[in-house]
Image (cartoon, rainbow, N blue to C red; front, side, top):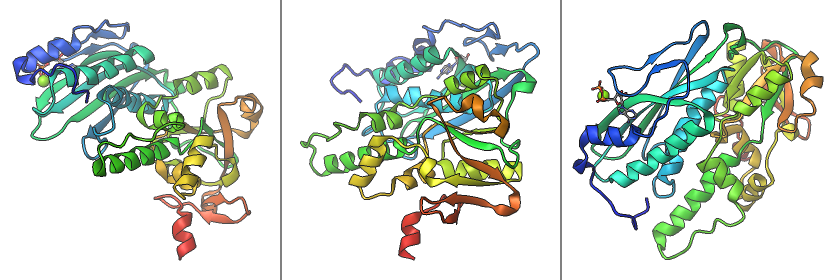
Length: 349
Ligand code: ADP
Ligand code: MG
């Protein structure tokens, strides 16, 4: 929080004053939004399309630490993580609702900052903020976002459609958000011991951005549409590649083989992992919060995607009986585990 600005107690506005302040700038963009904020419920009309709905709740101290997460970034991220789930269904996000529980330690200006991030994400991704709820909390901040999206029924992509021989693809690169979190945690620990010490964050802008300001990959969804590729299954990577692969395999009743050396990782991710003596593969497999898309496509579509620099083929789908395997650079097959594969534990066995 920026404590140099004027701080106004929330009690000066009251609940309705606060809601008015937070929602006054909303300009509705979508035809499907018949009524937004201001009545007992919002009214939506999706005509013939199917509707997807998804919710995520973030709690202070569990999902975020306000010692190093700016409120504007938190607001932006809270929206983005929900939009990522809508894109992972191959649907277009249209509306969100935002519910917050706040304690008296937050000022009006602090909540303004949170909503600056929320409004920015709405603008960036073209979604309407159509409502929410505002209540008080005894301790910290809780924020819950619900996203609503639409798609023609035949466009929707579930976790359950992967077939043996399909190619397994990921967008972007993995492990960055986890390494960004490790960096912020390290500098916060230093700060607690010595508040005068300046945090050492130079040279790590990419992994910090991956942690603090993630983006949802609607661009990948659009690119696939343009390439005329419909994934057979899709999921967004919120809990780490390993766990998401397991979800696809379980829901599709298939196995998978992914290749260690194919997993895309940024230079900074590897560099900071080396600094901390962590295997960067652990960050990619088990780290999470990358919000990239993991999807499968028919082998026959390989030519269509192979020149897209933002899509990497990391393996293929196998029969269920073959299990979920990570093929290491040395060529050995290691079963992926629900909590991911941990080579450090393996080595010390
Ligand atoms: P109700 O008493 O029907 O729950 P509220 O007074 O809580 O209504 O909310 C009034 C309007 O403001 C509703 O349209 C609601 O969706 C919206 N709203 C309330 N809190 C928020 C918030 N934190 N962000 C966005 N919209 C909100
Ligand atoms: Mg209410």
